[in-house]
Image 1 (cartoon, rainbow, N blue to C red):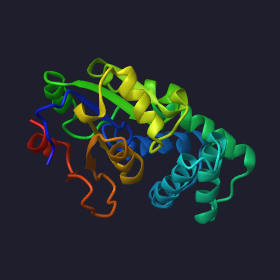
Image 2 (cartoon, rainbow, N blue to C red):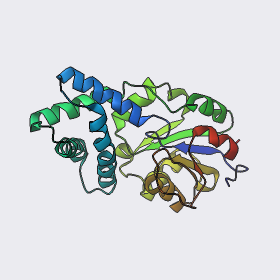
Image 3 (cartoon, rainbow, N blue to C red):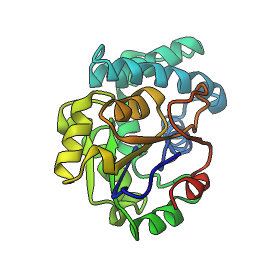
Length: 231
């Protein structure tokens, strides 16, 4: 269970935790494919893209590919998998349109505003995200999350990606708090949970995309379940 007696600060991941990445991403691709007049089945595309995107983000976290490599290769791999013919120029255009439009969609997981409203009365709230600096700030602003958070720490700005200890340590230092009074909530066991636990923070795993069960920290499947662990 979570020890709330000394808890002062809660750090959230953004994508797949508060901001509904899969829904917003699907709407972005629909917009792009309609704009480019692509005769492509969106469901078939997303069925392949979702796990491919997760795999390339893992490579990016591990510094095995660059930011550009992530953006281009996840699309190239997906189109090859569904045997849809696109050229290098089209891939680049889709990648640029995706980054341009993604943050304009504001959909959050159910109960996000109610949860943050309640937590803000008791705790200082912050975001730690591996997402790109400019894109993440647009997401936060356009989805109405900005008023809740004292700080947003992006891997791009800090210079280290979760689960590297340095991004958590930098966040704790700038937030003027300590590991034993802080809690991390995120969707990734590897990046959010294991990263936070290694620096002595408490953690809650919001298992929003069916990761394996574990006993490293409490697991929830809905943001509403946080009420039973924190409040």
